Image (cartoon, rainbow, N blue to C red; front, side):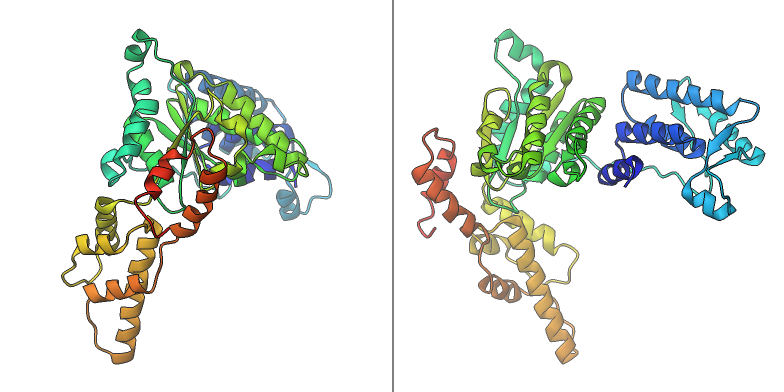
Length: 418
């Protein structure tokens, strides 16, 4: 696998990563593939601040010098070589192809640093539609979580002057933890909406690479991308994998170096100047390296509990919307699904619909989903959060000297059956 293939794997996770587009363009340029270099650099020019765009524009200017040379010798790709039945590795530039390349470059609006992408060699440029931003108004319940995020992340971000006057220390990130399926990612996106910031994600699959040193480079590139999109919230998903306790990873030197690189990048963030905020999420906070929980890093842990009564009612309404239903008592369903996660409630609705469809196929009589169908589905299921709570009870009992899990302990006191 060559360098371009590796970079394209990273790009597959985030097509708006201007840094990766830039690196791909430079690689194509070094290989002499001017057409693909222009396409990649033109994509890179769409993202980042003015300083970044100037850097990409300079690279495009260098390409223009190549295009204006009288007779340009370029390397052909393996695909082009096979198509043209060429024995050698270089060919002279085709005048018609050169004409196309000039047309692409001529369409650059250098004043605004925007490149109008043309269809070239059968390719087609695509513009990803901006995703609709969500805010806390779209998140049902979880008022304590919202309040904690407001104080730690949003207010220092939107009102830095007030915090500076009171000499209130700001910075660091927050770590959302709790049972799976309870909306940690959704809350992080809503936080970005509240801050009117871009939302970038990082997970273990975005980083790990079999080649030595590439994983660490991926970490650097993701942080560089996040800085190019500031104001930005960088969401680190599966922190138990990204920041796995190094004492437990002694047999995996690659993972240790990735964790070290991640700590270095986090240490270099100044929230006041970078306008880059960090939010981590994990189902297993006990597996995270203690170094990530030090002041200035993820020094605030926020417990994201299963949806409360209000939130469960809202989730049922959302999941049943658009389906043929009879009269439904959403408040009653919410009371019947205590400790259910949002994913559990979605599963209940899917099971109820599946049972109704099975009956319709058997009898040939179509009918709507009833209240009884849903309560029967609830009776067939159990909350998936129970196993998580039983696991963390042991950590609360034997490993909670710092009080990190006090919020969970207070929550569990309300539920004797766990």
